[in-house]
Amino acid sequence: MPSLLLKNAALIATFDDAGREIPAAGIYIEDHRIRKVGPMATLPAEADQVIDLTDHLVLPGLVNTHHHLYQTLTRVVAQDADLFTWLKTLYPIWARLTDEGVYISTLTGLAELMLSGCTTSSDHLYLYPNDCTLDSQIRAAREIGIRFHAARGSMSLGASQGGLPPDRVTENEAAILKDSQRLIETYHDPEDYAMLRLVLAPCSPFSVTADLMRESAALARQYRRVHLHTHLAETLDEERFCLEKFGMRPVDYVAALGWTGCDCWHAHCVHMNTREIEQFARSGTGITHCPSSNMRLASGIAPVPKMRRTGVKVGLGVDGSASNDGSHLLAEARQALLIQRIAPQVYADNMPLGGREGFAGDPAALSAREALWLATRGGAAVLGREDIGALEPGKAADLIAIDLNRLQYAGAGHDPVAAAVFCHAFQVDFSMIHGKVVVQDGQLLTLDLQEPLRRHRALSQAMLTG
Ligand SMILES: [Zn+2]
Image 1 (spheres, rainbow, N blue to C red):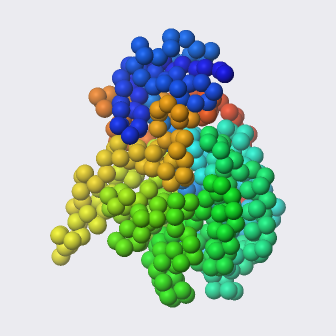
Image 2 (cartoon, rainbow, N blue to C red; image 1 turned 180 degrees about the vertical axis):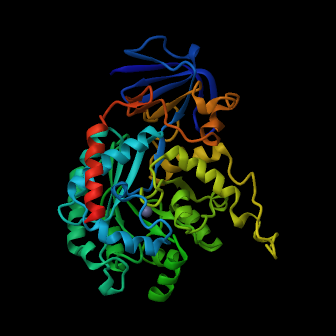
Image 3 (cartoon, rainbow, N blue to C red; image 1 turned 90 degrees about the horizontal axis):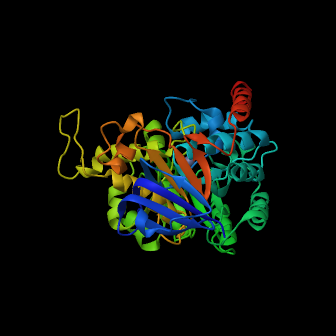
């Protein structure tokens, strides 16, 4: 089996259980798997391939647990809108999405993710107008070489039935389930080190029926490691919708449908109370924290420190490229750190605002290493993966490296791990996925972006101008 030695790294932050950070170290890899991590003297001196990482910090590859890559085609729309207004503005534009748009937007969005340190991503594609298929997204993900959890999303509750989306972007439920089964049976790899898994993901309480949620869960649970994903407790509008339509808060609604457990994760979870957080912790239900999107749409601030203290699995998500409006995962870790430090729940009990116009936060609410933990171990746990997220023997060879001589690191070299979050977001210099180098000297090796970006621009223009 082919072997590979990464040598002379200035520092390797393993994010293993002991949180080891090893100076002057390397990683020995065999057959896509990490065999040894440690000081250079403890590693084999030779390998089939040797890569010198002098002056580099090495981190586990980052894991993105919530996104809508097709939305890279429709950025900067409805700039000052809340979620429901933003969605209602965009649905008619998204109705013009084509299969080529799915393919091209997946390539470009994943390129942005990979250059920002992501080595595993999920994507939630929930509308299939015109000739759109999830197959084209999967083809793009395979071509660019990322580890991918493709979520077969869906919308079935149109405006005529009391849902939010117009009927023409919804699908028939029988067709959704049939296509979901076809996709699982065609593509899903349940084994360790899988490069592709399928996820079933009805879009949200206000765009699918309870029946589709139940049926999707039943279908997913017929297969090993097919997980369930949806949007939940994102905004107060959604909470009001659920109380009015179902007589329940969003978390109680999905729990009643069987959507809690180790095979479920929910995006956002901004508006959760203590009882609901405890319920998620007990049941092993995961959540994706999407700070940029939550700020952009003024949805609120998810109670991430409390979730972590309570034992909820928390990962990060860059979320829809049209509500972020980017796909930069290191930047998202930085946003998570910054937003939690001004989150009101930190002081709400003991420091009422009174007549004050401003307020203070908690500078220790989330540390840089905790933010990186969310982006690595947290994301891996949320996706149900034991084989990624840390640099230790037995894990997949998914890792990134940052050149300490870069401009953003000037003056921060005394703590390069924290600098990856504190200092302004940048692109990584090196990335390896499944033992294969995909970014070198800051350049993506698996795709020439020039032609896809030209095509992306034309497709975007066609969608936005109709
Ligand atoms: Zn989303």
